[in-house]
Image (cartoon, rainbow, N blue to C red; front, side, top):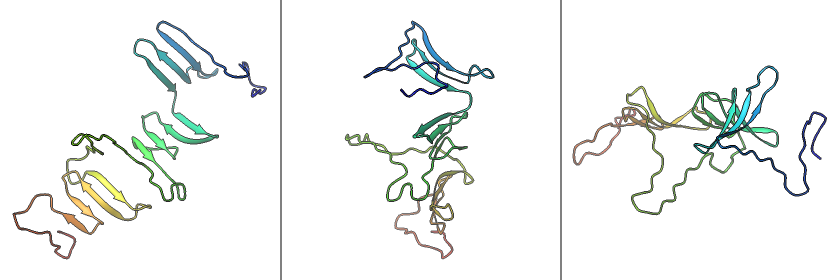
Length: 178
């Protein structure tokens, strides 16, 4: 038996164990204490077939006692870190993702003209940054696209934001402008 001295209810069977809740409208399992009776809940509503996990501050996902992901009260998802101010923050610490990618997006649609990758809608002016790629410690900018379309490669070359005339070629002015 896996219960301890603080266990009030243990369900045990040699093969399978389960608890079933049936209701025509809503089923709930609520968690709390004397100070906060609504600290968390698992709620299923029949009308819209939605299962909600509710917590007072954050949802924390653990594996083997180690937190691996968190959804904070602002809706930010942190994976590999415990806090974020971004909507999505993925962190792989040194050695954790050696010789592999931190994220992978796959669209395996085989129909020509119907397979799309990543769409980023961000920025409208030169002071906005729609896409920024830096090295591992964020000390060198490798590729940046600003909201007005200005594109910088390795912090050294800035691509023009408009098309040139027929027959023109990109050349450097020696100071980082193409």
